[in-house]
Length: 290
Length: 315
Image (cartoon, rainbow over all chains, first blue to last red; front, side, top):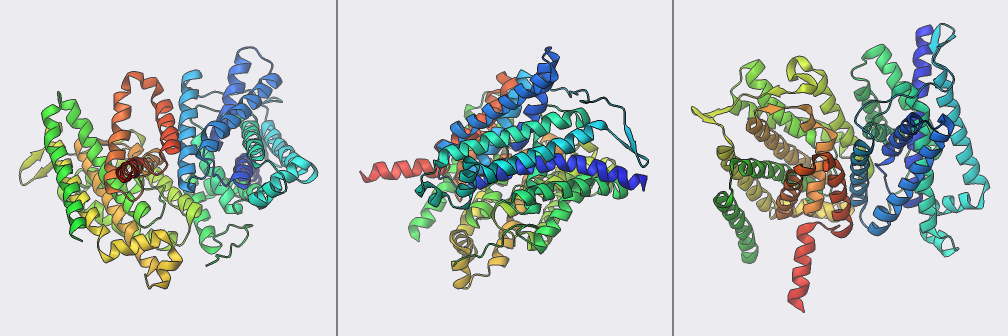
């Protein structure tokens, strides 16, 4: 039981991070149709900027704030300088542009920061808490709570503000949104900025547990992408559930089957899901028109 | 038809001339090495282009097949005592079988779903290689025995320049010919519209699978060649970044253009070599090159240039 609980909590913790990355993917995908492979780099930036700012003597809270701002600026620049100029290009071309951007960001981070692993102290100490025999890091609660706050905030923004509704309208039908006077370019910029902020927050929350370095982004982007696929591309609720599921799959796969093949195990399950339900677990069935 | 035949012949002849003439202007053996790298990457890219450019299916895990080819010629002779040349063929056969088995379910998926599925395949391939260190040497890689053909030990960058050049010529010839066969036409029909292709009686699933298998074999042979050439192999060759590099070569050069794949490989392989002075900045520059070329030449170098040429010719 203790073992099960241990895997459950570590799975949910990692899953919460995947969920945030997947949510970032979904936000950009819905607003612009772009699959943004540089999403993992926002997570890396969140962690790295916080580490280096706090090493320079900036208080942790302020350092985290700076990290989020930096990520938002980078997200907006990505949209303005790389995505906007390529408007109308094919989906594959756009994917390759964002892959190029992720390589670029990684290269810049390796030069500005360094190639070492870095750690942040846990926000509220590092003494594990004992829950029914499972040892849980206090930081796990920060990750889970933080992710929940982000999800709720995003929900409120999308459902209860004019700007959020404009984002939803753009996602539903870009042309119709433009016809009713929504500036879809601004909406896309908001999506990129917002998604960068979400990624950075995930990076700040998880760095005390998993460490960070200039190249953590690639694998996170893959996992987040897989989570978004699992939940059904374009569905925010699906993204969150997909992320949590993926985290649980990995934790239980690693715990009960084989820790070296946990990544492979997760991908295998996703493949199976995609074969059975090609639109993901919560995706809309797309009827192909001939 | 005559014109087409001529054009195909012209491309092959030009490629042969380039391969034959380059050695006269190369000042050192280092240049032969870089050129061989270009030929090998071009070979893999031509194969991938048959899948992406002709049949219109994306693969973000193609380096897995490259890795199978490379590790076959590494593991075969070292652990199993199989002669090197046989290991190369076994690698190609293995890749074909794997592509056939995996391709059947995977190719039912479309667009981004296909991308993630192939990507998952690639990640898993790289993971197996780094984990099974007893066989593969793990993340550190393993040495590869030199290729011996009828008692002739193939080694040295000069020799490999010619061997890989010849391989590229054969690969180009096959790809160009394929374009003009019923299979090639079926691929093109698939690319334009799957539904329309199906309506006129193209067995969509079968031809997609064929393109996938052909691409896998190209990748595997290119991987074997690189492993022989370097005498060493590590998991990076089968990794995600290498898959991305191959896709970038194809798209950069031009989807569906055989010459484009060669040009794309030449650009993407030589640029980092030319930029080694800025070694620190290699990733940064690679990222920039990818972004800028995708924005300004989104159809790829060769189609963009030839489009420009045709427009000029008309006015």
